[in-house]
Amino acid sequence: PNAPELRGQPVTMSAFVDADHAGCQATRRSYTGVLIYLNRAPILWHSKRQNTVEASTFGSEFIAMRIAIEMIEGLRYKLRMMGIEVEGPTNVYCDNDGVVKNSTRPESTLKKKHQAISYHRTREAQAANIVRIAKEDGATNLADIFTKLLAGPRLRELSGAILW
Image 1 (cartoon, helix red, strand yellow):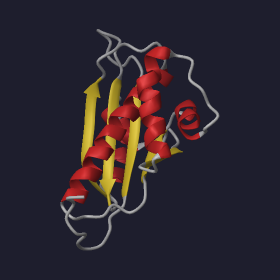
Image 2 (cartoon, rainbow, N blue to C red):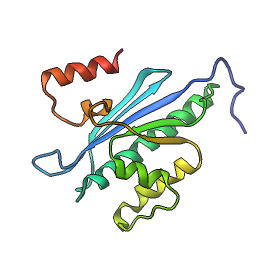
Image 3 (cartoon, rainbow, N blue to C red):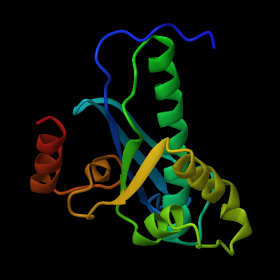
């Protein structure tokens, strides 16, 4: 109720999310990578080792998705408090098919209790129309640059695509 009146044109947001399962050789923890765009300009990125060791790629990707959604919700709130309207839900692109299906289909269930918080946080944001989760091919997921060691040509390809 205390939000300022809207000023200017509405903006669109999109995000790329990825996790490198057990990427840390010493601790076997996964790395999370998030890249957020505002009107096709990269404005926020995140690359950090996860706090827990996950048994599967699915779990690592769900934790990365939860982190991305928390960042998106915070950014949407900040923009709104500055009088900037975010148009529609934020498109979130993830390269893990299982995470996309479990996040977007109402009939899907999760049988792993330790992933329940990330699972429900992601589904809640999807149901509230804050995010729209979609599949992105692993070869074109721009968040790969924040999670994996890449060869020179692949690194140049992704960094060029980020800054186009």
